[in-house]
Image (cartoon, rainbow, N blue to C red; front, side):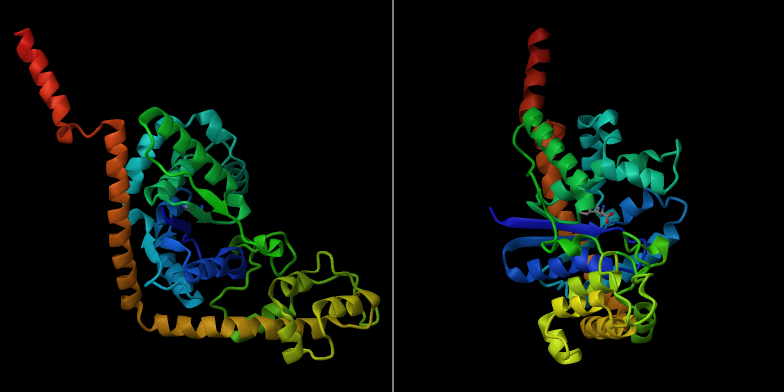
Length: 363
Ligand code: TRP
């Protein structure tokens, strides 16, 4: 059996560099590797609504932003199916059946959900839909019989939950569902990119993001005001690399070629770091280099985005076609699930015949 990918993002904002290193860039590589029989990339609007029920407009407006970001990064609709979660109603039916296989106590233990509850300050007022989104995520994954879920480490508890549901389902109803595996980003710097303010995570709510759609001028301003080493005041001072996010970004994005091209005084990042640590290297020089590196990477993405922005109808067309393909796939799985659970009453001639014979014999 071929390998199948399912992954996705909540449409609550434009995608940023954190998404790029954490997932987008790897998805494009996987897509172009030819190793996968099918690839599904889902815009998880229904999941986004689990904690944005009062703001559907935000979710609605961001579907196109996420789609534009996907396409401009190189997700190719000829190779990957991009679709919108809520347009595949089969997913909600699957979730309804899976809910019977998961206990409240098990949901309570999910560390990602736990920390999201704290972050969103839900207190005791947790929406049921939000609480159960790991189950809905299990439907997303199993509906496409996905073998592989490329995602960040924060998604590990969701995949674990999915595997448990698959086990439980298959052991009760017979082998039906496929057990997925998470595929983490390979470079460990890339698993989590800090924000431009040095905080642990790049996140829209912290206002510390570099967006894929930022203009060159915005990019320059953001890079030039990035957090470095607060004790590195004069150029002569020795500087620290740890927690200095300009260097974290260089770890993630710079290559030896970039040095030859933009900063030929240094042969490698190690040399640049050594100079910074011993003193005599100013932040501005390092930031200008980082800007050049990021600008080279983001410029073609920005240019492709501009083209797609001029054809919004075309992008919706891609999404609509993707939804049709996704729906057919999910319907097939739902059919298998219903058959395994024997809730396919009208298709089960055996059931109808036996009950009919039983009552006739009793007459
Ligand atoms: N939870 C993911 C996020 O927060 C989005 C998502 C929904 C997803 N369903 C998925 C990711 C299935 C991977 C697989 O961005």
